[in-house]
Amino acid sequence: MNAPTGAAPPAVLLELDGVRKRYNVGLPNEAEVLHGVSLRIDRGEFVALIGPSGSGKSTLLNIVGLLERMTAGRYRIDGVEVSGLDDAALTLRRRSTLGFIFQFHHLLPAFSALENVTLPALMREGRITPAQRERARAVLAAVGLGGAMNKRPGELSGGMQQRVAIARALVLEPPLVLADEPTGNLDTVSANEVFALMRQMHAELKTSFLVVTHDPRLAARCDRVIELVDGRLVHDGPAAGPAR
Ligand SMILES: Nc1ncnc2c1ncn2[C@@H]1O[C@H](COP(=O)(O)OP(=O)(O)OP(=O)(O)O)[C@@H](O)[C@H]1O
Ligand SMILES: [Mg+2]
Image (cartoon, rainbow, N blue to C red; front, side, top):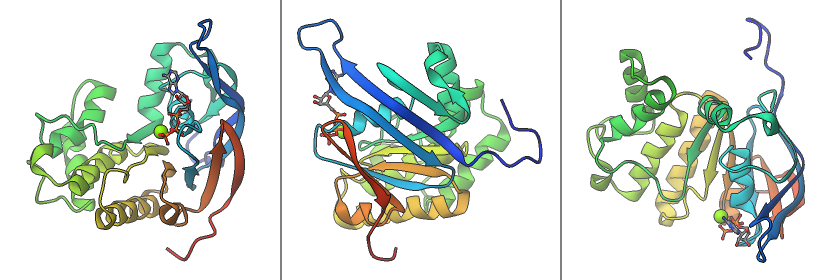
């Protein structure tokens, strides 16, 4: 539920405690891929999630993003323990709390950039108000696409497509944005620009970010780095990188 007017929200945005994930439960190929992950993220943090391929980064992100259920453990986000929620409640919570950016933009190809950015409002409320359309225009302008709002994804470069995806993730101003290798499909210059844009939006909106990246230079530009190896958290501390 919403905090009373005037009260600051609690600093803790999400907390995982002993989270385990097993795939193919009951089958011969059953495998546990997260072995008791505990983690806390506060409001406004910008966190990198790194680790080798197959270490469980996307699995963890999908659990945090309420796209996948954990097998055991506890997970609270925005004050709510999620293990007790049914699928409908999970969906509502996901729409109110989270924005997503993936490696491949997942924009709808038949829709313009502007239409893609108004989709979260349509999904959450079943309609798009004029104010929401204005807000989508403003966010697209903020990500540098003021002149490309009516273009379809296929008419935009990879970097521009990811900018649309960032605008879509942020348009409803969720407290947390999850990004799974958001620059993994981009050349170095575009990757740097897209990352800088995420940092800029973070500075402006105070949204928390949890960003999976394989790129140590990008991880070093986050505030905090957590590292998964073989489904276990092996490091959690400030990024030791150069100034952003
Ligand atoms: N739906 C699934 N069913 C069965 N096993 C899965 C499933 N999804 C992931 N896995 C397994 O879980 C482990 C962790 O996978 P995950 O995709 O989370 O790793 P990752 O760290 O994101 O890797 P990458 O860096 O390559 O994206 C891997 O061994 C993978 O094969
Ligand atoms: Mg992955």
